[in-house]
Image 1 (tube, chains in turn yellow, cyan):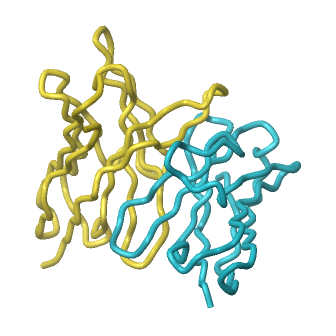
Image 2: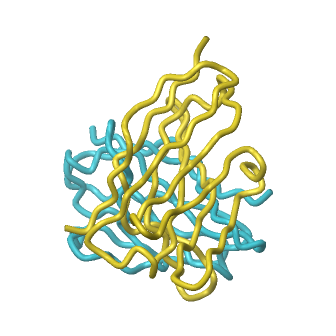
Length: 124
Length: 107
């Protein structure tokens, strides 16, 4: 089965660090981009960035809104992508989805396969 | 920054046709994509490249494009179609962007 399996919910304090994961299976992980999408409580979807964990190189594209705020990485050997914070804030409280990213032919992006999401709660 | 504009809500009765619009200056140059999100669930792609339908998506879902506006049309709306719908495209710098979302209510 083609799927993305995300790590479980996290509860953290402001200032703490965090790394959540997304494991792909049922397809060739190194042939597809993986992206991350944020959804704050009761709000819409926000495009955070994408990573290409290719066999010969790794490429990234971040949304300007998230550049410098989070780090996207991947470990090809275990078909897993990561989203990382070095110092969490209360405003990072949100559901975070990973999704397989495709390009539609005009250097545009879309997501054709989604994980179930990881809820991150940041509270003192 | 680039914005995609959707109406906050659309309401239709069962069996009627729902149309959800999405406007953006780059849409004549970039494809639009549509996602359905039901409460407590991850989004699902329902339309890609303006008007293509992924396998497994019912035929009542269709998409169209005209100038700076794209439209998701749901013909013969069913109760199970009640959800939030998001358009998504890409800006001139190559970054993805979502519309604000439209809540479809089936009366």
